Image (tube, rainbow, N blue to C red; front, side):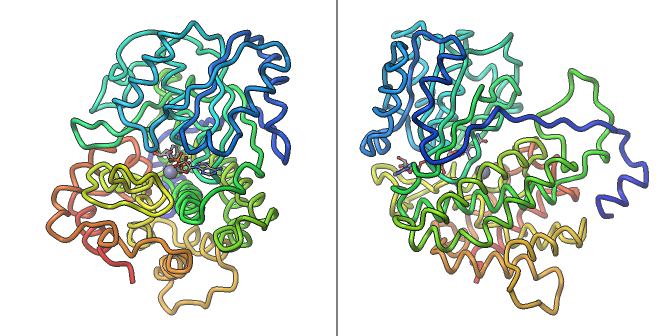
Length: 434
Ligand SMILES: NC(=O)c1ccc[n+]([C@@H]2O[C@H](COP(=O)([O-])OP(=O)(O)OC[C@H]3O[C@@H](n4cnc5c(N)ncnc54)[C@H](O)[C@@H]3O)[C@@H](O)[C@H]2O)c1
Ligand SMILES: [Zn+2]
């Protein structure tokens, strides 16, 4: 059944979709306006969160100067963990709590920093247990009791779109599973997006975080149509409401930008300002799409693939711990996942393939068009070849499946019903993608 047929058949009674995003300031030099923006929000004492890799670029200190320039007392916390864990979040919350109170936060970094800042904002505004807010079934999924403090998010990767989304993601170390907190109150108050900040991004991070954009755009564009859900009450409304006319526009726009810019940004990232700028715009667009429509199987699989990492140390990332970067983890099963979801909305899968790669040769088998576009791209920019490329083999599949099945919030957005057997098949067929 296509999205349109499902809606017409009357399956589901939902008539409402929701869409949200913070006010956006975009463009070269935008970062230097952070002091002005924070002053408008009335904050007097602000914590700037970042990670050690970012400190080396000098950007956090530039932000400090902008804040201090308008009379705001500001300090830097540079202890954010790349790919945050419940432990690393607790440390950041502990630090901010001891040094507080703060009446505003600035996050400058990739998704790891922005997500950590969301948790710090929540748990310093309403001190308590992190697990109370973490999604079910891992945590209690409690709603924040009230409004949070102003948070300005300044992304330095072209990837997650976390500056406009209402969730934060972390690795729960004891369970070896990734999950997060998802509530509209977590959404940053402002997003300041300055594409020049990404000029220093290593090619491997450009490639991985760019694949995150690709997956955000594709998964939200092919997500279950919002009208096919059961009717919700106002209290039941979730941040991921399924594909809808507004999210679709952003996802389509993101794919067109990616088509022109992605390979150039990986290859000539230190000098191609236009490619960097288009990638940043693509990330922002995709964030506005998936942050409301949702993501499905590739992201649901990405969580155990990252959470159960054995001994993989990707170039371009901190080398002290094994990790599968989020952008790699979510893309490794994408070709197979879109083979699986093709029948739910063939026209959408074909349109997405055409937007992402307008000149790609036509495949005899329509279901193969999007997978072949993705595989061509991933080979070209150096993404590992399947889950085998990051250290998994057939004997690991049975252990990965439950980690995916725990992501019920994401699987609910899948356009086809998906069972544990389907996931097992998708993972097995993704051990090598080419
Ligand atoms: N909240 C959301 O909506 C959302 C969406 C997708 C992903 N995520 C999460 O975001 C995290 C991944 O974030 P990411 O892909 O942005 O990468 P990241 O924040 O993990 O950073 C990756 C590496 O790049 C470095 N780096 C970042 N910007 C740089 C720059 N401009 N110059 C030089 N080095 C730079 C960092 O220091 C780090 O070593 C994961 O934890 C993932 O789960 C969140
Ligand atoms: Zn993602």
